[in-house]
Each structure stands twice: as C-alpha cells, then as structure tokens.
Image 1 (tube, helix red, strand yellow):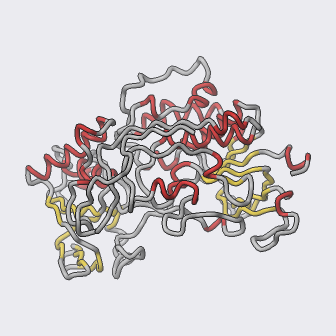
Image 2 (cartoon, one colour; image 1 turned 120 degrees about the vertical axis):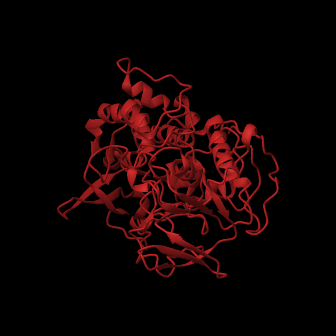
Image 3 (cartoon, helix red, strand yellow; image 1 turned 90 degrees about the vertical axis):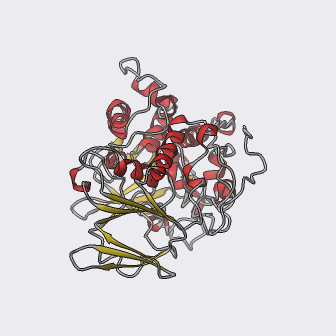
Length: 431
C-alpha cells in the first residue's frame, strides 16, 4: 500500500468481546482504529444471554490489552470467580467500551467489504487499493469507509442453524417460528413454567438450556425432552472430573443427575423432518424415520450457529468448504475429527485471507465449529494487532494454552458413540 493508504485506520467489524480486545490491542500499539457496530451498544450478543453463568473464570475473560486500556481506575473482579453474561458486560465489557468510545461507531450494519474500485474479479492493482466498508445506517443510507486493513469479529449469533439435520429448515419450521427459540432459557422467566419443552442439540448451549428448564422453582418446565441426532449423549455430557474447567464439568454433571432423576427424557437418533400443529395449540416434532415427540409448548433449537459471509462476497477468501472457517485452522477445529480441548496455537498467518490485510477472528473464525473460548480470540487479535503494527516477532510468538475438555475424539458415525482417538490429546503447542 502507498503512504496515503497506510494512514487509514484498521476497521474492526463488531464491538463484541473480541472486537473490543482487538481495538484495545491496536490502540495500545498507537495504531489508528475504528470499530463498526450495528447495534447501539457494545456486546449486544452477550446481552442476549445475560442470565447465563459462564464456565470460564474471570481470569480467562479479560484481555491483557483491555486491562491496560482500562487503566488503574478499573477494579478487576477476582479472577477465580465465574461471572454471568450480565456481569461480564457490566464489570468489564461496558467499561472497556467506554474507554474505547472515541473509536467506536454505533448504528452501522456492514453490508459489504471490497477493495476500492475493485470487485472480486479484478486483479490489476488490487493489492495497492485500500478496503472500502459499506455500512448501512438505520435510515437506509450507505456510508463508505476506507481502511488499510479489516478484522472481521462479527461472530455467528445472527445466523442460528435450523432444526433440520440437512442444513435447511424442515417442513413447518418457519410456520412455527413463534414456538422455536434459539436462545438459552432464563430460569427466572415465568413464561417457561409448566411448559412441555423439547431441547434439540448437544453442545454447551443445549446443556445450559436443560439445566435452566429443570432447575427447581415455580418457573420450571413441567416436562423436558432432550433430542439428539447421535446414538448416545455420553460424549455431550463432557469429561467430568477430567475437564480442566470445573464449571463446564459441573454443567454436564447437573444434566446427568436430571436424567437419572427423570426430569429429562432423552431421545436419541432423532433427526427432525417436520414440525406440525396439534389441536389445542400444541406442536409435534416428527423425525425422518417416523418417530414423534408430541404435545410440545415450545422448542429450544440449540443446533449451533453459522458465519454470515454475505458481506464478504467481493473480497477473496480461503475458507474450508465444510466449516466455512479460515483454511489455516480448519483441520484443527473440525468437529468431525477433533473435540479435544487443545487447539494448536494460531495467529495472524492462519487467519489472514488471500486479500492481504483482511482477517477473520473470534468465534467467526471457527465457522460452524463449536467450543470457541474467549481466550482463543484474545490471542488471535493480539497477534493480528502486532502484525499490523509491524512487530513481526510478537505477531509470530503465539501461545495458546486451552483447558482440556476431558473428552477426545471426533463425531464419527452419527449412530455410534465416538472413541477417544486424537493423536496428542494433551499436547500444548507454541509457535
């Protein structure tokens, strides 16, 4: 890029936990930065599950650059405590957003990223052109913002996966959207009281939903069914005492007890094919092999999320075709083959796209894969910021020490519980 381009800011897309950490890293290195956020406040996604207690402790939920940005006036929470989403927002993310407020622009939805005067096809002079971010305001007007680099941390929350196991909504799913929720239930919400609920999915969101719905109290559901596509829920329940995150292990243990107590009915090998209405306003789920779950008041769809790549259609990407994650990390996070806690360290080199200066970071970098931890994103953007500041030594010195899950192996056959099969389940990698 020429000298005019080098004076432009780095555009960070999204003011969530990783986007704020990226901005803090860049400001800490005296880099010009601008954060574009579609909502009117930071951490809008975290606020959607504010009632949920996290299984990562405080010490793993704050970035070093964020702490430096907050300065001595910030009173850090005790590192060993486990906050709720609301506490994460009020005690850290909101203060960090305030500290970075001069560099955040709210109410702008990114609808396009491109090279100046170049669409996807054009090669001539492409690398020398700055990026142009097309951002839509609430009144429909489009603002064009020039940038020397772009870090996409927009997450995946806006695109929840459907009920259907084929990747598309099943028959009746869209017609019954008022009964299907993609957020984790709040145990304090009276609308769940005395409801018959089916939870679909096998990740942490599904487990959290099951715990919330079966928690004792006046707002508990009357009947909870857990429907999974696999032949067993054993691996979904986690590694127990072998899990290095005790709170994550406790989540699985609570669901185990609820199953043993009869508060949760497990339905395995259930692949939803249809949602239909019953007389009396109830709903029925029917599987592809004809099994039915009847009399449902509500359905919790916890089948995962997908990245929104629509606004990246005019830039050059190198993504894994299955995961929709950067090709540089896809093999290490693919849930078909890998479910261990350890993920090889990776920084800017694995996240940069063929259009130089464009990075996908945060949970969006995992594409459709689950189990992303905030500390992974903090290290990603630390490396990216160091690279953009010209500090290659720091950028390439990537260290990532993730807590083990206590469970190893890929998804394998849907109808057979996978065996522990990773080559190096306890490996710690530093590049």
